[in-house]
Structure formats: structure tokens, C-alpha cells
Length: 255
Image (tube, rainbow, N blue to C red; front, side, top):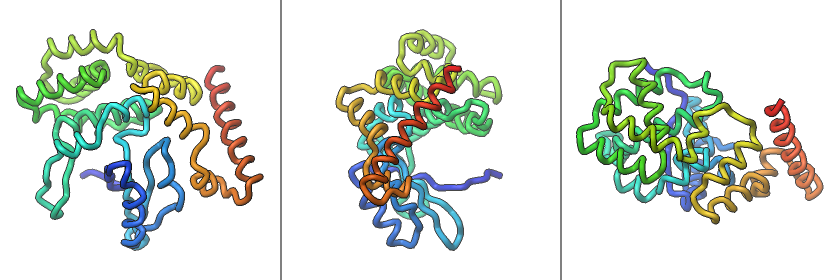
């Protein structure tokens, strides 16, 4: 009924290298460098026998202005226990709904967003009681994600039977007009414009500097693996190649 290519695991960012070691020890194959990527915050692992893939994430989203609004400890505290396998946990309903919304709008281009994502959102929204809507309302206001949630839920209601609290959606639309994340509803402007927008939307100066460093100067271990750079000269050339590619994409996007 539902094709699936991978399993997503979310962990504390401080445990990413421990998780990498555990997955490799369990027999999964790694590309050998993605565990050092602090820009996309994810790494793939493949079971050589079944071909199934695990995507290890140490942030809820690859878009920094979205990821910075979620705290792992809080997500972990609000997670729910699953009946099986033993010890497995998943995001609580409200957090799962918010993840569905930000995942939808973070995916580019918009034409590649499958309808089933809106169906997922519909099912999650149908399961909210009054307390759930109140919790969601509190979180989207605090995280300044009201506009994205209003837009996503309206898209879902246009495609599937879903009753929405009209007054609340209207309030979120109004709030969304002044939210930094509203630009995710607009046309993509290329990597350089996205970088500037992300920097302006990340909530702390420390976070902005960390993301800028991760994008412009990725970890040398990641660069060596990604570009096959061996010596220092090859590494320097790889950085120049990366910057030139990003500049070229930005110039093409402006034409």
C-alpha cells in the first residue's frame, strides 16, 4: 500500500558519531564521510543483504531555519512508545504533524511533493482533540511556524476530507505574514539566496555562524570523502570547486 525506501532515525546531535559506529558495527555500509556533515545533518546507511537504508538524522530538518526551532530533548520527552519492536519510540502526534508540515515545504521543487504527504498530514490532524489543537497552536506561535501550518493544512483540506478550525487558521495566516519562514512558500531563488535567507532566519547568532561555517567550510573529513581529496592541494581545490559550483547555481537561478 505504501512504498518505503528507508527508515529515518533521529538522534541527539552529540551522539551522531556513536550512532555511526554502532550502525557500522551492526553490518550496515556507510559512505564513510556523511557522519561529519554539519550542514545537512544526516547520513545514509545501507544493509548489504536487503538493500534497505537507514537515514540517520541529528536535526529534524535539513533547512536550518526550520531545524533550529526544534529541541531534541523536548522531542524526546514528548515521544511515544511503540508496541514493537521493543524499545522503539516515535514522535508524538503534534510533533509528527509539525514535522510533516516542515518536511513538505522544505522539499524542493514543489512539483516533487507527493500527495501522500498531505494525506499523512490529514490523518494526523484528524486525530487531534481540543487539547492537541491547543498544544499545536502554542508551538507554532512560539516557533513562528504558524503561516506554514495554515498553508499546509489548507492544502490537505483541499485534497482530502478534513475539518479545520477556521478561526485558528485565520489567526495563523495573519501571523504568517510577518514570520521569517514565510519565504518557504515562495519560489526558490537558488543556493546563495537560500543561504542568506537561512542565516537571517536562524534564531541565534551562534547558530548562524555555525551554519555558515558548515556550508562554506565543511569538515575536512567530509570534504576528503565527498571529493576524493587526498593531499592538502587537492583539498584546497575541492573547496574552490565547491564554492564555484554554488556561485554558478546562484547566477543561473537569477537569470
